[in-house]
Image (cartoon, rainbow, N blue to C red; front, side, top):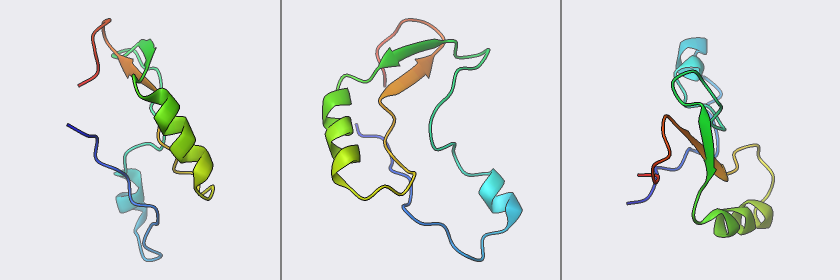
Length: 72
C-alpha cells in the first residue's frame, strides 16, 4: 500500500480554511507520536526528492509514531 501524494500545487483561490485543513508538508513530533523512525525506502525517497524541481513538497524521509512499530 502506498501513501497518497500531496498535490504539487495549491489553488490560487483556496480559502484560509482550506489551507488550514491541508496535511502538513512534513510530519513532526507530537505528544501522541513522540518516536521518529526512517522509512524503509528513505534512499529512494531522497533520490526522488533531489531529482525533481524544488517546490517545497518533498516526501518525508522519516515518520513519527506512538510506539516502535513498522509503518503502515
